Image 1 (tube, rainbow, N blue to C red):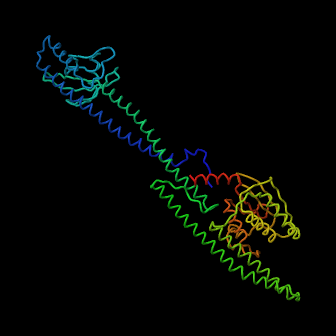
Image 2 (cartoon, helix red, strand yellow):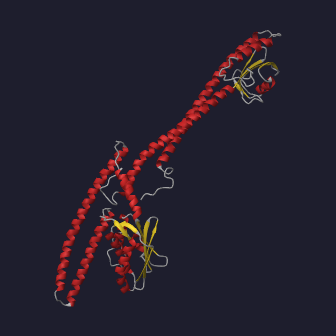
Image 3 (cartoon, rainbow, N blue to C red):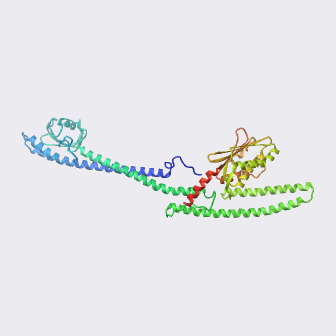
Length: 491
């Protein structure tokens, strides 16, 4: 039987499949973005380096050709200011309105003194940061100036008079472009991942929902009606193919079970007929006046024929039950009433043997079962107690409900089950050393309880004696499952 988990959505396969698929998609797209981000950053830096290298060459050529007079600083400074207006990737001016906050021009002598500075702020701090950087000549490098949060990309060139010219470009605009790219990507990435998860979860849950319906319907088919079929879909996909395959398989099973019933009915008829005829002839002979010593073998033969007939019926029933082909006529049965009626039937025989019988019941316990089979199950249990218990023992029966099950416990204070067969009690032809039966009683009990959707357990009590516990689904629980199965089958 199927039980509903506490969190059906979080524990479902659709949730796990959607989660893993979304995680794989999220990681994949994040790796793609990381590569794209690196490509864009490298491309922006390549463009900035190309501009810096070109402009610093122009400025070095101007500085080299301009005479070293009073106009030198003015001419070179104006050329540097003009170059700053052609900065690539410029997004905005600084908040203080200074247009030179993103570019600086610095000319320094070999002694490390600043000869010419064009830009905002103090050129000494910039020159100190440049001197502390181990950079190759004619290769742009990064410089972090103290007091400025954004680094500069700097290109340098050495002119013939021994001085060096540095042209720096703030990476503020480049970082701003990359920051906007990351924000937009993460927003779009989050929306796509959530949308993808919802789509995958919906599609997977819908697909697995058909599988769940087929599984639940198939689990109930055979317990009550072999003619029922799993719900079939109109689609020609794998789910529809699975449903059609299961229905074809159920058709073959139904035919096989029908053939099994035909064979067992024929076998039972063919065997019962001669046994009944022999018994009738023996009874006819027994009815004639004859000596007692001649009548005893005939009575013994009739008893053996009765045992053989019972063995035949039980063997066929166990075989059908093990094949899930036992024919059931389910009705609402009060288990308490059945147990009490069977105790009333067996109590005289138990009293004659010196056995005491007690029953504890919580009241009516209604189950959906075949009344005749249920009577035979209780009869088998009481027969075992009657046959195997020594005198002066007590048989106790308790009936209660637990977890939507009716639980019947039969225990005694006798010798208990033989240890060597305790784990094989429900197998056919397994019996104790002192048993005179055929070893089919408990096998029949287990088979009937199982086809009714219940369980049976056997154990030896700690204080001595045997204990058998039967659990059968209550009528209300079975009705709810039957309605659910009918809805799935007809859906």
